[in-house]
Length: 473
Image (cartoon, rainbow, N blue to C red; front, side, top):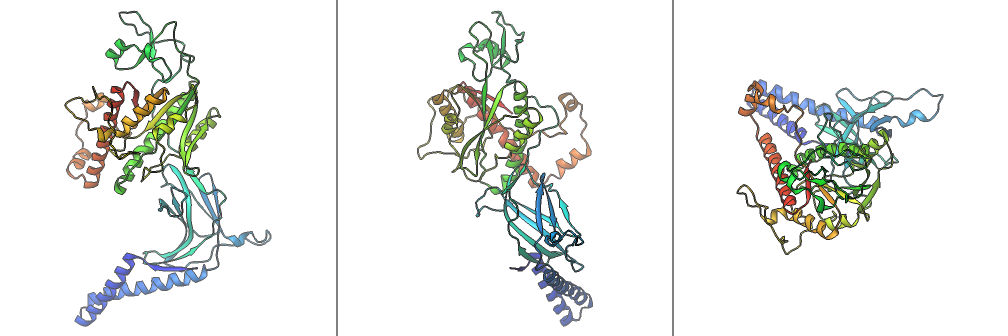
């Protein structure tokens, strides 16, 4: 069934053109009459052209195929007989165009809002289209239709199309940063046989701490000097790490205007985390991903069974599952995550601070048993702002699972200079222009990035005060 609509600016231009024509004729103003007549004439021509093109396309149902993230649209009648010459799409009236429009949502529910929209122009025998504006994630098909509109976008006609793809969604993989990122040294003792040559006055050899190590063997005196956790090497060295479970918590953003900024930080975090997992596999550590799946509505474990390039492709496909959430109701609690870790395994808990959004909070506010050492630099940290971090620490203490917390921070720009170059940087014209003419949107974005950075550092101090090993990634 065809649906015809007039856009908002089309209605405004049509009404204003008619009013301008009428006022010009009544007042005898030639210029107003000519301008109003031209606008009214074009509006009438656009409506007639869209109607004629829609009549030519009323029986057309193109075939849609998806391959390697791209789409191919062909006329359905071109496959009726091999001896028949290839059919082409129907012609369009000059001034109009036909698009095969695909609407996507981030969840399979029919009531989910539209997250992305692709418009594939149709002409000739077939059209191949590769989307470039889709960010990382899994996109579920919500609606398919033929969209016929004029070049100015005044009028549009739509023909709904039946679903014609076997796979209910497409996957956009995360982008691994090209520059070499400084990853946490998470290699086990079996891989890194040579211990570090750091020695103190007590003549202890040490190596970096890894989840699963005995906390009683932490070299606290070396930590006081280097601010990094290390293990004393000796006869009572713990067994090497064999299985590592990696959980990625979906961030929650209630404000709709900040979701794009939250998604950009989270996508950069996922890209860096992909490189970390690849480094872990190269170091010989067996990894498995624990993710919340939309389709199953539960925590799902995915084993990394491939090797080499196949393992990197599997990791990128799996890391397309975590996505931004607008509500925290359906997300699992931290205790459920720790319970899903197998016996004898370790956990890498990765998440991004939500900026004070309470997750799974009860009516009675949660208060930690002790908060010594959490405040620093004259800054007081309110308990209600850090309830998520305290709940993670409480669930971690009750589970007994060795855990490394990785907290996300805003991405670093690729054109960021090194410290030595930054010291000799000359204030450029671009910097002056940005300083004088920065828009309100860029100022809000910078303030939002700064808020996320402060929240990440604050929660890192909470984990440190709770004797938990946490890293900024």
